[in-house]
Image (cartoon, rainbow over all chains, first blue to last red; front, side, top):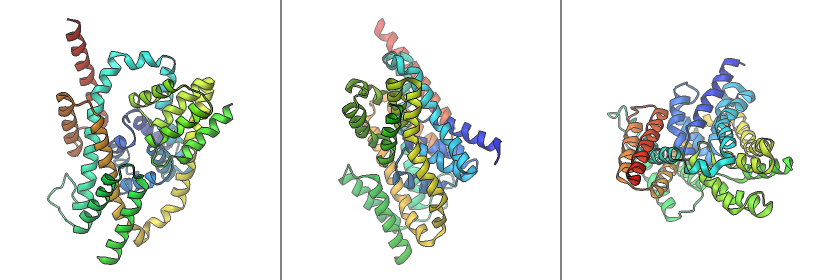
Length: 191
Length: 180
């Protein structure tokens, strides 16, 4: 056990918690910046973990913090990382709980959020495109010459995407299940 | 009272798969209808708070409702309750499930699942795009942010901070225009 690493887990996830606006997926590039670059997780593992997180209870941020914390430093690591990701929200809500209406109509807060919202939408689209390019064409955007295209991957994409657009309220866990079963059949038994 | 807070949020944490907005109806049925900890108006406030502060909605709402019911202690118990199921389940997955990850067939399934994940993220982006107030400035900022992240030009934190500053400046200019 390393006290320095425990502290680093706490600080890293504190930062992630502090800058996550607009829910779970907006934190994916931040996760990549902070966690993949530290070698705590490979970018494929990050995608696998999103699937695990969608199929288990609880918010993505907490699940991610617990998972990485545990892998790095066992139970204590899980606790420190989770504490880190929770702390910013906890503190901010306690501060504004008494005067929420004033907070929400403050011109700086309104302005800040009006600027952050479109940026977050852009970030999530970028994550979606990065994942799609990677999983269908095996393209790394920074190394675009290395293209491999699989019809089978495009087939899985079109199937689950159509499913999710036809049944709008479909729970994410079904997307995970169908794409997993198709992956198993196509890559495991057909190809 | 503290235990009820803890236990209620433990259940909310345990039964909301997919996190985030899936939690809203659960929180409503417990905190507003069953225990009457907060009013309907306050409930709407919480959603607005969750959208205007960083962090997961589960944590934001647990902290806020806990505070309303029993001060800082209430916040701590409610937040602990909502976090604990994830911590326990994910620790178990990290301990046991990940051993299966090297299995060849599990890897095939995950190759498919990664495509499913890309679809989930794409749908989240489309959903948020629909809710966005569509001003020319918002479009420009969205597209620039998309390109910056896609080509990995700036760190995310810096990008969000710049977005916020542009928003503040724009808001101040707008307000000045209105007062003139």
